[in-house]
Image: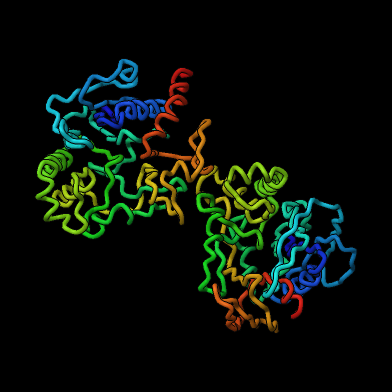
Length: 268
Length: 269
């Protein structure tokens, strides 16, 4: 069974996602002993990647506000076609990771011994701890469980093929599903598409179609700043909700989803 | 062994509980269940009678002067024509075929109601009296009994508690004492006295409780129907969650909205 990491990286006006993906590939090799395949719209050749798939078809991109910790800039948001994971991955067993995941330990290795063929994170933990991010519990107050599409493990099975086909369908008909699931934001969000697909394949009720990714997913928001990044140690400045104060926090040996792309780029 | 459903329904000036009982029985037929008995105080319309195998008109109505009309509920044991009886609140829908062999106690009470999302409900909002007085947290919206000595003892005790509820509340429900007679509270006290209603982690029949503040929502409206969408094609879906088991809709106008759909189903059958 071939194993590897798949990462999507499509640069926009300001953010070099490929640079982040390069860091991810180095870390995947160091901590997980896995090759990485890059899916990008940039024509590059970099030996750090096991394989580079150039997908330069122009998709219907949206925009979103990117915070650098001080101000918000509206930039192109190229988040579509995460549903292509199944078709694009060259591996029998794939871990799909967002490019801004900072791997600092090896718990993702446990994916390969899981009895489940599809794993997602149901919960993630804010390093800020005191902030209210209950929005990540349910998709909306009345709606279905929230699943993170930032880290995915899947095996190439018929069920998972259907799962990713369903995500494609949801993406193509997002306006319908947005209304059906009472989602206010018009911007397509992979997390929502995955959450809806899990709900549907659970038979529109609580179920066990998907398993829980091993380890814990910690995150910092785009209002937090990454100050240092060395080996398995990361120093953050964390925003304190409803104040202008920032508090320093150093992590060691934990994998973190760092959402402030600007400050991440500075330390890479 | 005879098995069936018993539904108490007595109209008051505001609510048509008999119509709800009719809907409940209709939903039961639609989901493959049989044998329904209505307990009421006046002859129901002919149309409603068609879904019931028995209609029992109470001879001695103890709730004649009451608004809520629950005072006759302790009579379930004697009135039921079945060896095995599921008793339902009238404002419920039966969404699946109920397997009577799943009930593993002589008297089985719902203890773990769920939200429309299949999660444990937030019970603290409505159930302060139960928690503060350490009463068994049972729900009489759906319960089961088989005709046997322990069930008879329970109903005999329930009669005593319901007919003397003020005195029993003073002793067993002193904290956050309800101002009205409640069949849930009285049954819970009766359970304490006859040693029934022991804590169970799971219910064998899902009981979806749609009380507004039980849904684990961060913000609530006045009615759950304002907060979350529902639709019914083959199955009832609330917020895109398929509903199973017993659905306790609580908001009376929901019955009017859904009744026609069930009548159509019956016509097709």
